Image (cartoon, rainbow, N blue to C red; front, side, top):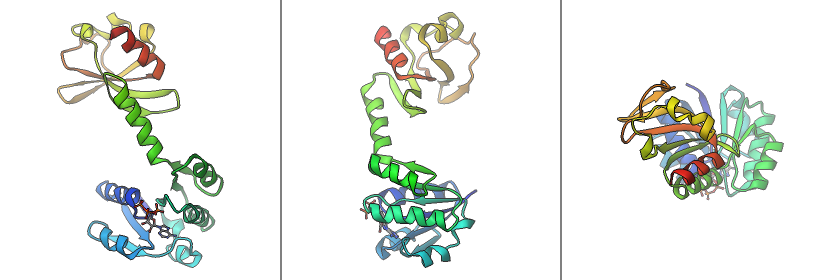
Length: 217
Ligand code: ATP
């Protein structure tokens, strides 16, 4: 369990707050808008009204005691930048700030953010891969080239083993796990035979995955 200061209860902040509570972290949420604070009170135990660009207010929160500070302010970039810088100045251990533009991400990283979360870009990139590449069911980007993909198995793999198929050598990706009957089988035995309706989790680069399905159809 972590102690987390979450600033900003807009659309992104509210989803984060719900999930953090669900994960049983100790959350203090802050927003300058009383209506947003009242709305969040139904499901967040600790909520406060306050302006995060006000130094005395930030100091009163004792930010150095939180394991993590999240700045979930998107549109008002001035506020987001001032808050990020102020948190770091006041001794915050780790600051993650929301960006809505590439240039914002750069400035936030230069002014106190340890990490930047770029929800619209990340969701757009995920959706582009998920819905444009056939047979891909889920996707977790790791670097600009590499990702983990959940995908269907080609029909001609049923009844065959990873060893026989020489997956790594032929297709240049690694099989991390097999999903069978809703269960995840990690590091599957190379001699195990694929069954009908099974899915695989692979790690590889996008081009290798595209080439694979181009050949397999
Ligand atoms: P959303 O579009 O996510 O609903 P929004 O359009 O109101 O939010 P944002 O600028 O992204 O605008 O702000 C997100 C939240 O952060 C809002 O609820 C806003 O009241 C809050 N916020 C913005 N600036 C501050 C600040 N200086 N101190 C505290 N809360 C702030």
